[in-house]
Length: 253
View 1 (cartoon, rainbow, N blue to C red):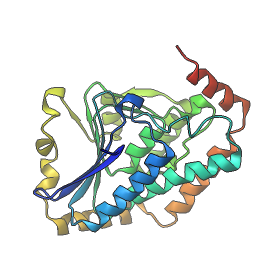
View 2: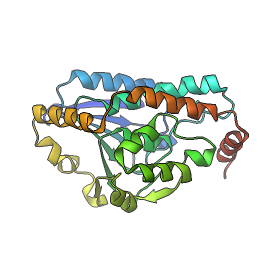
View 3: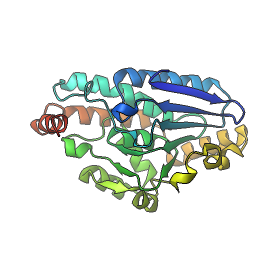
View 4: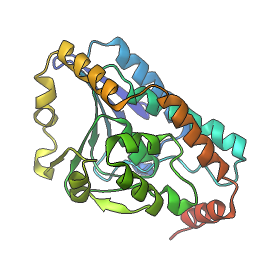
């Protein structure tokens, strides 16, 4: 089994991409980013009603980028190059031809929240926590997720969340509109029941729903804006604040 797995649910006409790295809190390495892109391209070739992205285990959906690949000693140029790989993944998810659904099996931090934000719908387990914590590491969203966040929630809340780096309870984020549904733990295992409202729709409906949604939120120039955010994040990579924050994180007890 690979670190990123792809499963086509032919009887229900949807596909699931799973991050299988529970021992590393489902952190995304450069190799995993490439595997994610491969899985997304594969999903495009299947006649699916929607695409699900989830994580292994019940602790974390995704803890963000793997600091072995995104450590504090990278140059600005190398940081930008590495960040762009995952930015491409997020853009493909955002403009995917049918709806994308993040099944948030656990919490998310940093890039994990960016990955969830790239999806159209976010469904989480109750009592989970989520944080755009990049500012606490002396940087900002580096995969283009900040640009996407401003399209998912009120712009002023997106700005505040990114700037403050707050970790919110799922219940608070449901009220803010970032999370669409909360599921009790005892109901979480029945995925078909959780996904029933989407399974019930036709392929043609879901394609039309997604195309109309993309028209409403406006995606012309989206990739360029996301790339610009990556450049801004990379420009902070060599700052003392970022290096010290990463060192403190890696050396924590």
